[in-house]
Length: 388
Image (cartoon, rainbow, N blue to C red; front, side, top):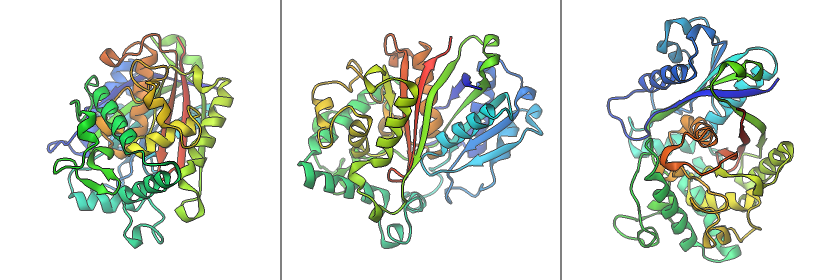
């Protein structure tokens, strides 16, 4: 059995003092049900993508989704955690249940409340998604991990600081068009490429503009068995999907090769019966600009060490051959951990249904989504197409 997205919702991403995890979840759940014109009593199962990791006290939060509607009571609800790929993991768990015939209609929610604690606490919570005994316990943070990747890449292929700055500026420009983005402001290349009081080095060679944002936010979708599709006004089909996990310790891998993402992209595209050149757009996991640069190579847009080519020739820009992160990506849209993978799929679905507003890519017909947990450890690639 195949499954399709038939309804969705997306909250603004940002720093919201008066929003807690429950209100974020409830808001998108109600709007997704309304968007699909589905009664809560029809939902057979619920999957919630959420990291937490000590960011808030609510560690048992799956049934918070039921707060959105009394008729969700009794539906089985499960929290899914797979680091920064918790959202995609929740989507895939729901798809698996539909394809196994265990349910016909699934509700997926991704949500995170990150701004109720200090920046140091956020860094510590996210650091727990590394191989702790060799990385977090030795003082490595995720900015430090991706700075290490950048340093290794620069040593191998030359200094690419300017390319990282161009990626940051591109995604900030794209974010201006995204009504849900945390940062809707152009940030010029010159600013991104210059270390200053307002753009300090976070972990050399990464500057502040090379790092994604700390965010609150949520997104949700309704997935149904494809046999139910005639009931709905539109749908988006998962033409293919692939999850690939790599070793957790950096010491067991060549992180610059992005081998896990590369394998996930290769196998997902093969399952979909297409190539990277057939895609109309891609939403990829730019937790750091260095990650997006490595994504270009993992996707097959450029050979190893030559990802800068697709920035220099305009391929990945909004008007290029394959726009990457037309939403602004994690860099400008924001990165509420559990919401990210759901958000990426929702925004890609909007593109395929012609509902992306100012972000719309003309004639979008096939989309790639890449959500990543940890330092290219848990890797999820989806190939999406409009079903009607």
